[in-house]
Length: 114
Image 1 (cartoon, rainbow, N blue to C red):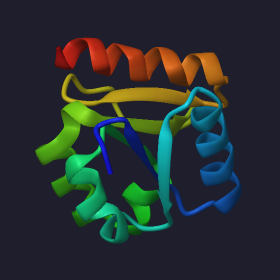
Image 2 (cartoon, rainbow, N blue to C red):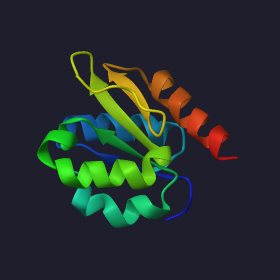
Image 3 (cartoon, rainbow, N blue to C red):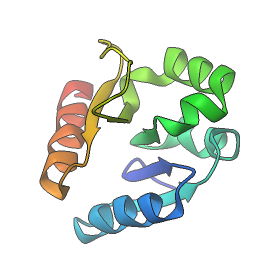
Image 4 (cartoon, rainbow, N blue to C red):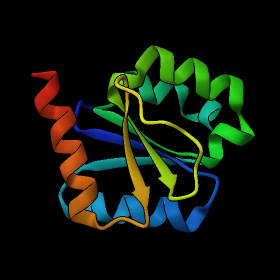
């Protein structure tokens, strides 16, 4: 895996497929997982990890640990009703979103990392 791979973590298979497709069209390599625990190793060397907020409810301790350690390379997908507050150490994207919305957030992370 190289630094252009993006990890997608979501319990919903349809969401994982949609996000991966949008990224692969833009020539990003992706790896998809249904749990954060399964994605942990790959996330360490990836360009970034896209994490659906459902994972925060299903794996709260793992998600908190992940976001505190690698938040700068994380994008959290939230719904409009989420009680989560956007934090400085990770990016958020509100569902539903478009491919260009997602790419804009990824490009912002890439630029910030330079």
